[in-house]
Image 1: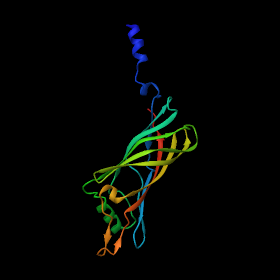
Image 2: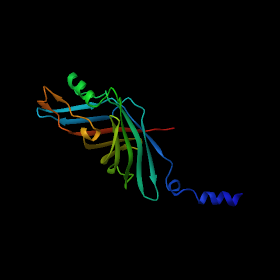
Image 3: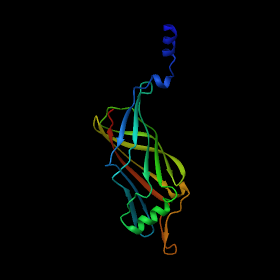
Image 4: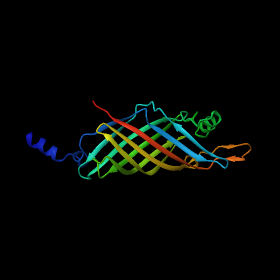
Length: 196
C-alpha cells in the first residue's frame, strides 16, 4: 500500500505540483472603473465608484514558469455608472442595454509577472469583458503597486468599441450629436489580502 501511495504522489498532475497554495485578494470599496469617450460636441466620462461587491481575485505562484498569476471575475452593475448628468446617465444606461443585461463582467484570465516581490511592476495578460450579452477578449498591460504585504493596487486601461458588443453609440437631436464608437476603459482596483 505504501508503495502505491508513493507512486500516486509522484504522478500528481504537473499543474498542481508546480504551484504553491493560492492567496485571495478582495476588491475593496475604493476601487474605480471609468469609461470615457468623445462626441462631435464634447467629451464625456462615466464612473463606477464605491464598489459594493464581494468579488475576489486568486493569486498563485508557478515554480516551473517562475511567474505570478492572477485569476478572477469582477461583477459591475450596468446601471451604476455616474456620468455627472441625469440625461447622460439615462442615455448611457440605454446604450448599455442595462435594463435587459443588468451586469457587466470582467474576467481576468491570466496576468503574470516575472518579479513577484517588486513594489511596482507591469503585468501582462488578457481580460474578457461581457457586456450586453456579448463577450470580447482583450490583451491588457497593467501596473501593479504593492503597498504592503496585505494591500495592492491594480491599474490599467483598454480601448474598446461599442460595436465590439453590437451596441450603437448614442445619438441626439436628430443625429446632429454623435458619440464616437471608440471609448476608453480605465480600471483602478484596490485589493486587500483575505485572511482565513
